[in-house]
Length: 227
Image (tube, rainbow, N blue to C red; front, side, top):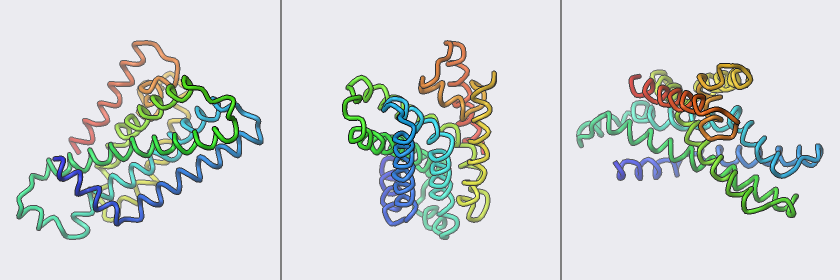
């Protein structure tokens, strides 16, 4: 399993998708910081807003793109026949690719955190404290895990289509934007994208709601595996 994950990362080094993802995160954090200057927001507020909008607009779409790409590429590049001859069980291969996507999700979230933190240190040096950094670090980390769990069904489903990784961006954006409405409704703990905020504790919820959030995200992973 570890060998397969390592191989997936080596493959991604040759892909432009990762570079596009990193540039997207940097530009997004830069735009968020510019907004903080014009609106005179505090460092804490801009870090929370960046995480929120990143969850609704950026991270799920990037994860869906990368995840569906690395799963479907074996079929599209006609390398599946070679893998079968090794042999490698398909379930193990998919599990390795999904685990790779999970790790990438965590890395993307932490990268977004790093970008926004560096910019805020420059802009609001006096507002950056150890407690603020630690709290947001944990929130961003858990948000990355939650985003992967939320979009995992889309990742699995999009691999059915040829070049479905590009199509997955459209589906994920619609799916994520719907979370904006769900987040302010009584279904915020059920709808997986909005449940991510409860899972990471970035929104104030009860213990029951937290349990529902976790079950919602676990249900998404189960659906992805069944697909």
